[in-house]
Amino acid sequence: MPANRFNGFSDLGIGIGLRVPHYNHILSKKPLVDWFEIISENYMCDGGRPLEILDSILEQYQVVQHGVSMYFGSTDRLNREHLKRLKGVVKRTKTPFLSDHLCWGSVDGTYTHDLLPMPYTFAAARLTAQHVCEARDFLEVPVCVENVSSYAEFHESEMTEWEFLNEVVEQADCGILLDVNNIYVSSKNHNFDPYEYLNGVPHERVGQIHIAGHSKFEKYILDTHDHPVLDPVWKMYAYAVRLCGPTNTLLEWDAHIPSFEEVHGEALKARKFINQVIRGETHKKEARRELATV
Amino acid sequence: MSSRRSKTNGDGGGAAVPRLAGPPAGRGGRRTSPNGAPSDRPRGSVQGRQTFSRLRELQRLTAQAIFRPLTPRDNIQRAWIDGRPMKQVAAEFIKPNDRLTSIERLEIYNRQYWFRVLDCLYDDYPGLRAILGDNSFYKLRIAYLAKYPSASFSLRNLGSRLEQFLREEPRWIRPREEICLDMARFEWAQIVAFDGEARAPLVTDELLRKNPAKLRLAIQPYITLLEMQYPLDDFVLAVKKRSAAMRSEASNAMEGQHTERATRRPRLPRREQVFLAVHRFDNDLYYKRLRPEQYRLLAALRDGATLQAACEAALRDKGDESFAAEIQGWFQNWMELRWFCKRE
Image (cartoon, rainbow over all chains, first blue to last red; front, side, top):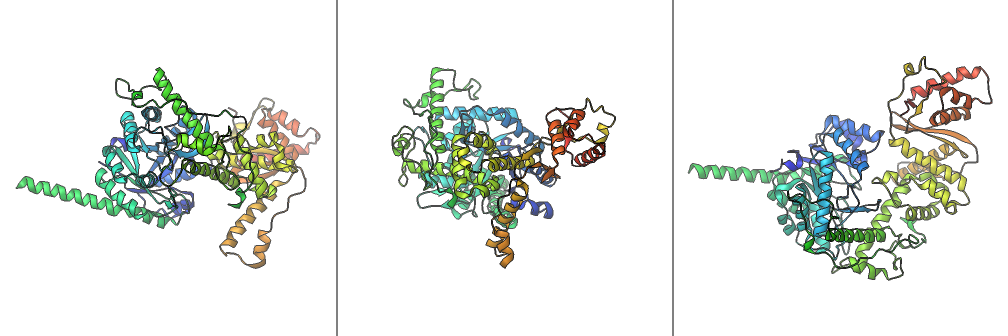
């Protein structure tokens, strides 16, 4: 299940986000890392240091692109200039697939630079799926959409978030970047059962999983990516890999970034859960074989 | 962040007031094409147009609420553009939950937006901040962003219209208009130099035996030529050195008088005309001082003059033959720096 058509049949293992404070360490020490996820927008420039760094990283590592500003759910048309720049980076990185968020963030050409929640309506799902298809056709690479953390819901909504996610990915026939931390954060902010969400998504479409830390406030939880992964999220991750199989996994750590070793060490904790699933599958196969011989 | 404290003008000024109209379309709005793929933009049918325009109205309303500046206490404003209570407006489209009201939930996004964009300009314009001081710089940022919200997918471009804004509304930089305008141009030039386009540089062989009366060269797109009324290059270096020293002091890496000297606020420079090329070499950022003749020559080339015309413009008051050798030296240096490329 991990390598599927939604992630370019990639079986990458456990990666971390490529972040500026780690550039020197990575380029000088060349640590063993399964893969790096880059924020596409950081390299959608015309030249200079960012592209030099990216090229150096690409000499050594597999890179997968993750975007933050495609805004599939915006009613604005997809920005052609944006897509052209993004395709330039796709050609450079040879990313097996790319991801962006199931959200909106711009209107009438102005940008909030945020991942704003959608009203979960059929009309919004249709429009979002249309944009995903348009982007995938232009970029010529599989696309996965990521569920976002949210702090508000619209009266307009006609379904749950996971039903909306289903609507979009089925209509667009695209993959899912399942962010289990985001599900946890939203479940606390909107009072739903995160396991119902995990059960409710089409597992065969999951091309990648995100894990991250968050911050608790008095009345809500914020998706801050500035902590280690918290226990409830690890539990959800373990459950998710049981449902989806050992899937490309990435730890996001974007603020108060500690040393490379600390970030990578935190990510590698995921291996325990992946190995449990692999062992479980092996046991199942052995049991089936034994049953067959009996 | 203490620099966020200031009184702000309430709204976008004269903007249309978006409202949601009519009931949601409901499940009947679903429509797929025969092959199961989502149909083209949902604008074809009357119902499709209605649901699309309703979604657009909702996004406009939400964005407008998010773009409105925060109060001096970093809260969402209590009144909407048309004077209605904001909590009433928020309740019309945002669901409350058992811990947060509709307006409180909207406020989370309103704050996130403003903290993000204000921080971005704070980082990109340390020189302007040093001239104006934190409080005035804070007010300027809010006024600028309220008038010119981001029009790019990248926060890198957030300051692209700052110089224009300062020319339109100089009251935010009074009484230091001239030095602030110089600084805004200079700091934007650094952003361009950091990741602007680099074209294939011309090599000396490509210039040999070319007729200077016909030869037109282009300057690399990442280079900005500046004529400034203040020597801001040294000032900005001092500002950056100071903030590095402040960071070191915060981590106790420096001690005593050395720290005190390094963390002293740099004095504003005296008026003095300078010419600069803001460029990069091997992807490191540099500010190179130019002589007035050099600036005139490069600016003429940038603006499309032939090599001969550019040299004549540069040396219009000279006419000395010794300049021929000097110009050769300049070009040798600029070629080594890979400043020239072909015109597109």
